[in-house]
Image 1 (spheres, rainbow over the protein chains, first blue to last red):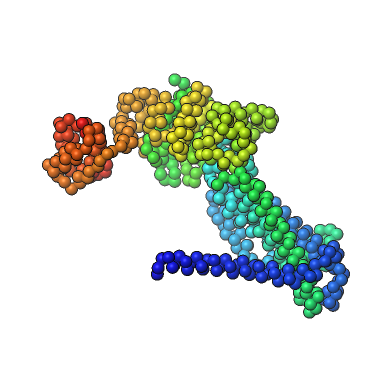
Image 2: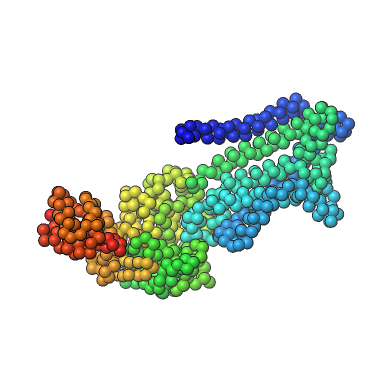
Length: 283
Length: 329
């Protein structure tokens, strides 16, 4: 085959794949905005549901789901970050990275990454039954943390492994300890990647419906404490969309739109932050 | 001559490959010691043993003793961070830390407990001045170190290493990644620093060793071939291998104007071809010929010398080939 033709053909193929990705994303967003925007009123965002959606009721808003999702999303994100960052740092060569154990830890994390979230939910449900805890925010946050940890650890691990060895050596030769080197050099150099990992986990956590179905349940009320049940946006979409009335279904799209905006806002913020942090990165 | 680093029977292994074999030598205080030798002879490994950076390499083991100020560096019960603080390292490739110029220099003092902003400011200025970088960066101390040119980065690394106030500076081919002007800059700084510091420089640049060194250690295949005062080793090496290394370096640096390949030719043809090739060259030019006939190795140089040309070197390249370098007169 003519090499020039070959070149053009494969370039076209790549652009086509890209078009499919961008196009489908665009369509998803369009449908959600198209259907959700008309019912997006102030009261939708500031009032809790007045109930009765299963009878076609459209009173009140989805504040309960927004608040519930923010609690669940940020709560589990911070908890997962607290555990994942030290865990990922421990997988460095300087700590246990050279051992056989590290290999198996990475392998099991990769497997955990692939486990469907409903399985996490079922597991959480069994544990909660055993301890006699009823469906609550706390249970949901813990299950979502479990769901996010493998993602965060492996994503962080990959960027931390990319930190050049010479940078660590430079720090060691100045008499720094492993901890000082890790905190001042490794984390700093890998920060944009770490932020991305956190965002990846957050996206998975806040958007997940299956794992919180059994562990948090759903309610029209705002949660008063960690031990209360709470509503959430993904479950709002699920319940509202399964109703026959089109007015109720529209509210499902509005919920999806809010969810989209939350993820987008966090994503843009982290981009902005990582650009500021990136200033000093060695490339 | 007062010894500062005392190396006693040091052996180093990478998995089952022995990189250093029974190294025993003293490194003099407040002088520049050059470790010379071809690539892969163990120069960098020896340097890495001094500050035990070799610990970070997979499968590396070291035995023996390296005594610095009555403390055995290789003893694993000592505080290695303290040993490393006493030895600044100037790496082969500049490796600024992912922070600002100021923070790069202040990094060392900070981890060793200096918190006072004023004192840090003074130290940063002082060591950037010593490294000859202050004037170029004083207006942009807060900008990222990665924005500096590579030569400036290397001087920054020098300043950063000096800021922890070491007694010893280790340099691992510190100019091999730099342009000639930056290299000269670094060399000048090192010469200025030797009155206050013991400097050990690993280099495969023999000219650099000659310019800088007071004391020379020649390593070959993990063993010490020769060590001694620089002028003695360079002018009058005791060991044939040292002489060959020094001469070889010069010849490989020398510009060869013409090269002829006489492989497959026997006497007297190779002799005739060599004569013709020399005849065609202008006076003072250099000819390299490759021969594989054992007779030619002795006879060709002898005959050319008889014609008045200067034989610069005769060297065996591999099992079968020799190279003869002749200057036309």
